[in-house]
Image 1: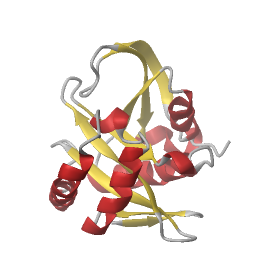
Image 2: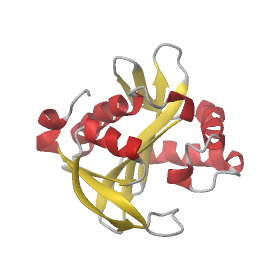
Image 3: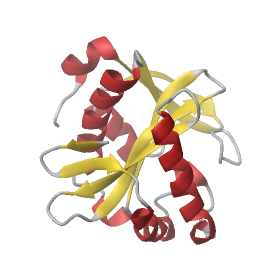
Image 4: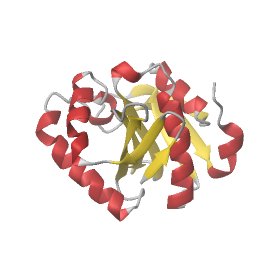
Length: 184
């Protein structure tokens, strides 16, 4: 898969992404998705192989789909965007992370906007779901800028969370896609 935006390329993962992902794990960027990443270097290659296999299967309802985000200007891998199936809610959700040094530049909202269009077009998903810890203001803002609507706020314990945390729940429906996305 390959999508291009003004500044980014969203593409299939390769084993060459291992170093960049381990680097982002060391800056804490993967914590909310993978939990403690102090040993990510031991399993990152296996995770990349699994993610590549799941992409080949092409079913966002099975487990997850993950893709690399790279900057067009220099080809540097700066993060990831994908889907995850929330078994506890029976819904396909969007997941993402961005290396710490690339935050605050609008990259993630740009990637999410392009990626959700792809998910709706390619996988027959009618709605995407997202959660973000309420304290993670940047992630909440990213979702809102990408067109997601806040639907609920309540304690939630995600897969790698030790305790439930006050979280915002968001949704973006296929029919609301164009009217809800904004650049700001």
